[in-house]
Image (cartoon, rainbow, N blue to C red; front, side, top):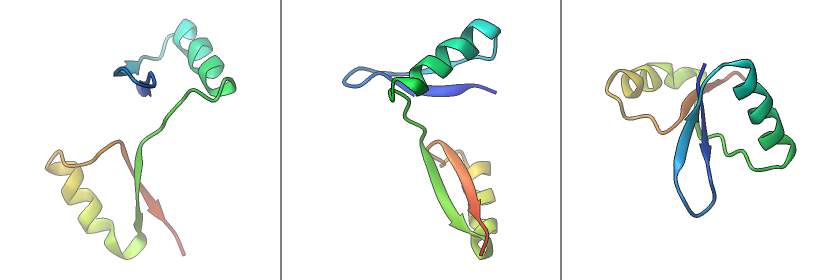
Length: 67
């Protein structure tokens, strides 16, 4: 699973899933330098979330919020 990391004031990069990447990602999280982009959707809007995913319109991840 790739993780997007935004260097403040610069660019967004995608971190892969090697052990070295995992260590770097954990350090970024510990340093509070990780920005994870997501869009929450209520359960009754799951069709909308899938539609945006299918159409490439999501910014980050879709998160389904259960009541």
